[in-house]
Image 1 (cartoon, rainbow, N blue to C red):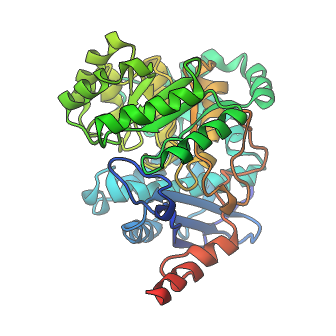
Image 2: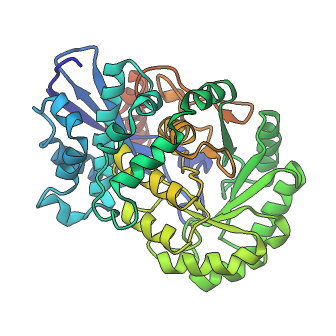
Image 3: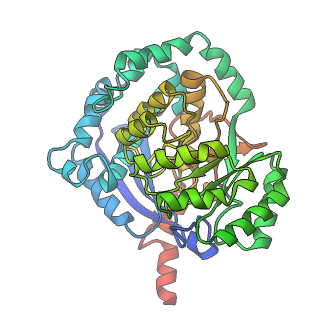
Length: 440
């Protein structure tokens, strides 16, 4: 591998005015402006840069940017080979800085910033190797891949040796699954039909369009009012029928008992899962909800706000989730994502990553391809969220065809943004935000 040094970086606050059309609206977050803290790493080779981002929804992105700047003091000037030769050690150095960890630890703003930094390193590694990210990690021998993961706090449930054996158990048939998924793609579901702020006409039109695009799984937001939820779900079922899958997402608005009572009133809609029914930190509460809803055939899904591998470990230990919705930016980058995916595999819980947002679809289709090819070897109850907003701002955007993610071929983790989009939407000095300021 070429010898490179991380010479410098930029980090930008990029915000898109999605609140204007209620894109992304849910019961907890009715007016988000989908945004990101966007990192670029520079080396002495001008052709080799690393891009990473972490998803936010507007105000507060500037705080994540400042946290990235603090972490970058540990990255700039370091030889890239030294990072990847002990990636687990370097990850721990970033996540466990003796002063900065105090404002986590391993959660919140500091962990969001960590994801942007770490994923930019993975993007750079994949580009150096000339492979899409999924292919880079699929091609790794189990020992090498496991060496990138920090097992601190999860080794009581999953040891390095167990992780290696899990990967080895699928190794002989990796090539067959790789060929298959390149041909078929990875199953996706759409949330674009289900934002809580949409009117009936918009929702019906989006359902019909999604059906034409080949989707067979759909998700809707719920939780603001039980009668409005029944109305929305009736409308959606009228459009998609009962042969297709339907999931709902409450985005943390309920108390534990309220979640159980509310969902019991929605059983006629044959729902596959309820997502984020209560506080993302309430592991026991999720277990209580899961136990109560299991006889009704409704699973519990969560993960987009689960801050680290430790919370996932507990959710899995207590049988609190039927679907593991890890988030590529809420966790501390790909290293921790892979740790959670391996934990889920041990408990035989399907990984169905959270996506949408800015750049999350671009990230997660790499994760899903790796999970299928190297870890799970199964499509059963596995599908990944797709939201059709903001992909036009990426150089190599995620694509879906006939309701399935298309396997990427371009080297990298593929969250590089178009320069003109950065110029227009950088906050607060981008062309768009300056024009808004002038109007007011």
